[in-house]
Length: 447
Image (cartoon, rainbow, N blue to C red; front, side, top):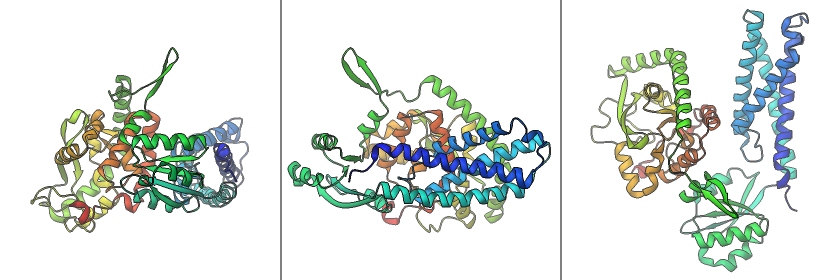
């Protein structure tokens, strides 16, 4: 039976709208009836409906920005985490509004109780939504077509979502176009990975004609085209790809955004800076900060700042990336690396203009030289300033290979917007709780 792909967006929006409406109703009903039954209060007057509407709008906006409405694509844990972030954020805003109106600190217990009810609603909604989606759109049986090698990473990642994807068969391009077409006809969806350009074009056209869903592992050229601008000269469609990075206007807006947020972050996080600095100093009396030469926009070199997480002479035998259970990492270092607190001093780099809050991670000089020899397109990521967080940090892992990180960085550059920066900042919270986001290279990978 043909899957209802054309209704996917509608199902998503309806589902998340229902959840957000109920979450909003829970907040205001519980607060009004249990914690603030005074119906004469200004907070419960004519502006009450407007405040509820603002609550719903902010919750819906954050849900869309984080992408947690994509219940048919994300794992359940990811949906829960994103929705919890949205609820915490919007409840904090609503609580602040109440405190400002009442001019006193309101009942914190009430907010926590409301959040627990909303969390219960989230779990029930998620269970029902996945049940409905699974009934309407059962797991796809996919055929993966590969070139020189099978993309084991893709197979492993998609296999983790067995409710959504089942890779039923793999086929090499060496089998020939006719045999591949016969295999494609057996499945609703096809994954194309590392297939030569001419054959890939033929497969894409055939799948498109046969209404097959196509998943393509992109090449660098695909990423560049993805961020292109469509132009039509007379009757000829043309795709224009810019090679200049961000426009002047975008750079100005991004710089203002960086300055404002980095100043606020320094103020808010100053107690964390103090505690971490004391812990590092008291452990071995060594320097608090660690400086390292990195590259930013236009391959300009600068000293990146970090809280020192390794022993003082960690690189006496030359630069070496961290590995799992690295003996050079101090006990304090293990904690701050796990929480990514070691990166916080880079807020200073951002404030002085050497980095941005969001952008490709600045690489060490020797890594830039090595990767540029292996991947000539690697220098393309230096069309923007390096960032504290970035597309590759949110969607990848610490030990994701350089080629895949490059593709993710180029996706960011080609599709830059302030909204994308905000989304990546919000999603960065998630990687603090992902073990694989901080895991080091294995000794084999380091070699």
